[in-house]
Length: 343
Image (cartoon, rainbow, N blue to C red):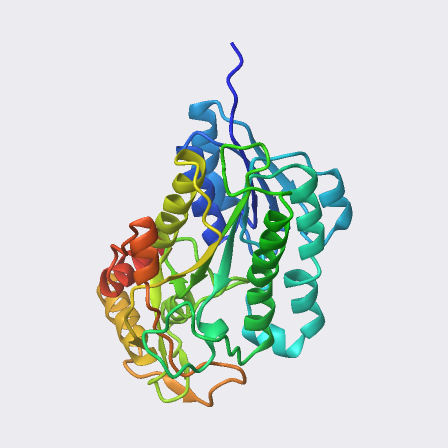
């Protein structure tokens, strides 16, 4: 007997965040196609996904390609949903190589939109940035309706995808080309997660690099990590599985409850964590794991890099109210789990 399988496309599905999303989708009995150029994605991140797909007899396909390849989108088969995770994610690269940042984060948008329209995709789920989007806000915690003031091209290019899809959706729904009734053939919705500083297992120092794996790697080599600034810069750190939970709840609302979202949401723990606290947390966990190593209790302090925000703390009430989401992992415990998973 033929059983219809929900087909989901995940760009950047072999990466840090993307691979965890692939795991959740397979656990929900979806067939998954991954697009990844493996510039930062890794086969090691897909071990669990391959096991799940085999156990559940689900279609699991990997396309090794860059999302900037126009022929890829022209030839790509139809899927029910898109999780768009692939991106240029470095503030520094966006400043030093603006064409690369623009090409990946902006020039791909019309190709993706054309594919979405052509294949009647039901929903697009997107990973936006939050800290780089709001820049140096005057309101903390910062709500979603705060006017974006990105201080680097990265924040601007990432936020444009959400802005574009919002505008296109509104226009097509006004013209009755799309409907908010997800039970209809032309039902469509989008959801954007404005992520704080995501960390956790599978994050590495290449590509989607975060400060925590960088600190872990340097400590493991008995080198002294650097902090850019005096250690007082803050970020809202959110554990990767809490991010996945936010996507899972949005997917359930669309796919199971058949309700449109058309919203962007902050995803964080609504807490400011100083750079120095990050350093101290990793230092303490590494000291317990490797008591014989010579680890520096104090970092090297250097000048703040261009385009970096000084503070970030996200108001997450909207996500809690609309989707019932709540971050479960504390920063302290999350750092411990991340360090353990690294080795």
